Length: 73
Length: 392
Image (cartoon, rainbow over all chains, first blue to last red; front, top):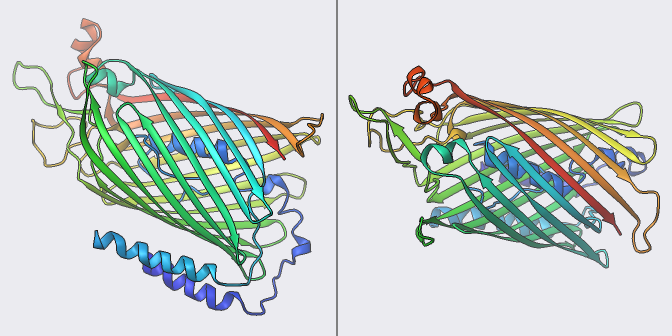
């Protein structure tokens, strides 16, 4: 997976600093800036729920937001 | 070690390279303090305690945070009752970290220390985020390494060292603005575990010899575990002021486990000061290759597990949350609010049987359920989060 990540990053980086014109202009992003559109509005609360899931489920990783290891064995 | 160091160096080089690019505008996280009480109650286990998080920025370049977290555990879970007795203990966790805006890339560093009577864990993490394509795309890379020490407590109060474990996580995140109302994000994470990965107390059970009683023996796990997880999350701002969020995640690991979960969440403001959140989640997984509820005899396999978290099961969750922003002002704060979140989770195990029904209980129960023929296990849990937040 690391190789895929590397190739992806190179494509992104080489195209990222060109004179790209965003189709959603900065002044059109008011709705996206509303707190109700935050993926992780309250990190302290979402981190705890991730901890609950990780302790009760075999799956881990790609939780989004605040993750991290813990002594929850 | 060489196999572990190579991807670390590889990602570190990419981090530095990305951090040197000049084409984006990120900001440090907002200043806030949260004081939370958390509670988990289900399956004979109650865990509760506080969590306090304080974050403060300086000159819009650096943001530092500290988190104190505690679990107070009282466990009479089916695992504990099957092969031991009820216990109580505490786990305390301290985290510190910083986010640093350098050359318009956001670099993040963190350290977490978790201690309990029989388990210590130290985790270092760092990451970088960068915006691209007119700030419509945000890329994040992360790496963390955890070093754990596992001990086994004895009945006389002493404890024995049983092993170390190392955990490394490599993560990639990409979020993309699609329209004025719609945003999507993709996450991928690889986790590499190495060392003592089982619970030193949990036991497998095996079929009794003729006329004998069911046998118990320690679990035996592989010393490595690699896993990959991929997730997509998307949010949409509805035609009125409310949002809907959807999440799908797929997981697989070298122990043969495949899992997936789906979640949908609806956030709706009520008047100007309240936010209501409603969500539903489903999770399912199949068992690890070396999991069995009942083994044929002692040492019948090289690897043996009877951890219900490694069995085939599914869970359904329903959650409600309410946030209220106070009208009265604090002299040092922009705003402050109180939140209450409640999650109800139902766990339904397909091949983990309720061994208590053949081991303990009334004579009728023992006669009714022979070893290996007990009903499969199921339980429900309530998760509460109550917290007060100050934004300053």
